[in-house]
Image (cartoon, rainbow, N blue to C red; front, side, top):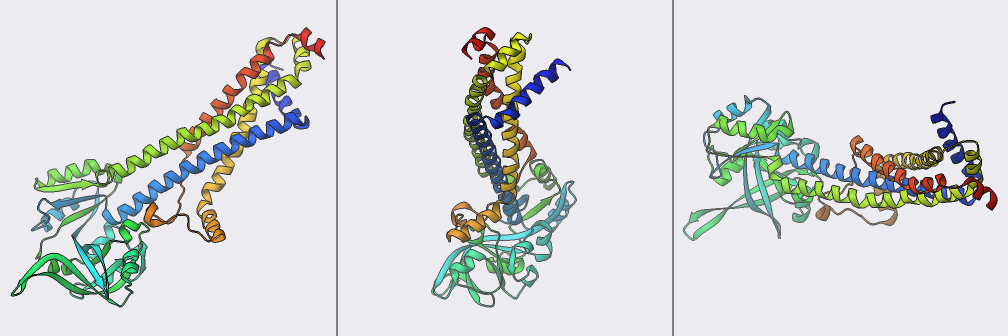
Length: 416
């Protein structure tokens, strides 16, 4: 039997025997449970932050695209050659033109500000996943000349408009008449409802056919800009620079990392802060191992004396109790990882069940940007959490193990 196996065998043996030792067993169970809860909470919280970030990114990009090219004066004339150049650019999968402007929409006695976006349905489906967010209607219903509109869900609710009804769209550009300048307006038929799941967009967005928007805004054949869908979304900063060079200047280019950089940076900072704060919870749970190991050392004084009498060195005694404490830490971490994964994977169902039970909605989209609580587990986060928890658990065993190594055999046997 090797020396390593001898110390490991004793550490495992002491851990197993502690189950039958009443108070010592209770303290060990509490330490394992506390560490498990700390690890599970940390996994769930970081998974929610990951899911929140990824869900927001996907929902934002489903409307805004990976990158945009717009005119410096708000419009791009003779844009078709530019579209061909961007389509041929390496890394660009699709390009779609759009017309965009602020406006106001009314229905009966209600009114609301809107973001009017004119699109070409066939091209738009290549750069945005709008079809998957439609509650009713189809993008193909936006036929030029028919003056139809697809409204965001929250916008339709605020206006009290339903599919088949008509709304009036008013834009800031005015027409000169004998009685003065009157705002330009047009009646549109509601043919669909869009729900991205983000109140900021569902409350403002109104999609129409691009020729209808251009006609209402008197833009002729000009467009506001071009939206790009990229093969690698994380290569957007490099590709927009290539796009600016390919077009020869005179354009404003922007990618999703620049449009929402402060927003995603705040999420990342919040995630790091939460990791530090919740790591303190794990540390408190890990340091409970100290009390457990102190009780074990006091319980095993006679065994320690016998081992020392048979020739075991203080270093061997030290390693025996470090191994035992580390095993307690591993049990707590393993249980915490299992519990955290189960909760994270089923988090949305658990939240919905709790909301149904208490009759209260915890996530208001007007406050939290979305009504669901997504969770995405990353293996890197789990490894980091387990590493920190295991290091803290091992540090917690050093003082009790050192105390055990300093026990004198004669004194321990005389006290017994």
